[in-house]
Amino acid sequence: MTVLHVTVWDESGDESGDGSGRESGDGGVAGSGDEGVVGGGGEGASAVFAHNIFTWGSDEMYGFAAQRPLADRHRLLLVDRRGYGGSPDTERSDFDTDADDLVELLARQAGGAHLVGHGNGGLAAVLAAGRRPDLVRSLALIQPSVFSAAADHPVVADLYRRVRAGAGAPEPVTPEQFLRASTEGIGLAMPEPTAQRLRAVATSMRERPVWEARVPLEPVRAAPWPKLVICGTWEDAPEPYRTYVGEPLMVCAEAVADGVGARLLRVPGYYPHTQQPAAVNAALRELWGRSAGQSG
Image (cartoon, rainbow, N blue to C red):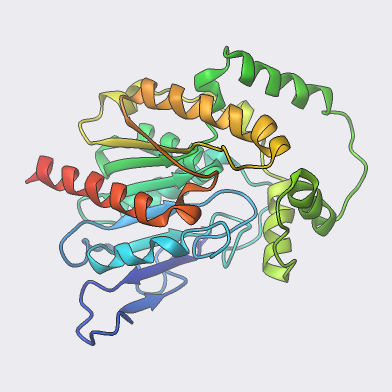
């Protein structure tokens, strides 16, 4: 059984006054470290986070480092998906496998947990929530890669056409070359190509294409817990990034929110949880508070 690395942030019992709290790693899906069958810390239930490509759970650049303040009331479990961060390598990252891993981790939390997913991690999160809604306390999706929800929209259809047109055998590129093309090539700053970053990029290059996913949204819509979809407005994104990535993601966010009956929150920028952490964290607190009110 694969043991995933899970960064655990729990500052709800911090009596030092300095916010140092408790942090642990290797609290994996198969149950190592101190991540066992537990309830939420402090005032609220635990929250499980699933990251996007090029990153890992606690990453400051693209991950959930800016959500650490939420650990003052909740036990945060930041999963490193297979092939990312501290988790073992995988021959091919797969959203179905990621969803199964999330279900297994949710099942280890007494009373279930809140679930948060970004990008491809959002795809895995909504699949997991649909498979086992009884293990979920609330669902928050940040620009989820659930393109099947808007497959007939012209913007997404155009994305599919571009993907199919470039589906031939690509020239071999290194992870660093791929990272540079995926950032500087569309007007973004390239992060430092550390070994951990390049490993994440290499895994991303081998991910199962998200447009192969067919996501049933009705089980999530029928679930009694609250749902939230967060999307950037993308006005300040470089034009190629907005056109080829942002517009499909915005269309997708609208379709997913409508399909699952979620509140749709738009915030400035194009990486909501890293560029607008105060707004995103406030929205998550409100979502989790509504869940607690429903279960109380």
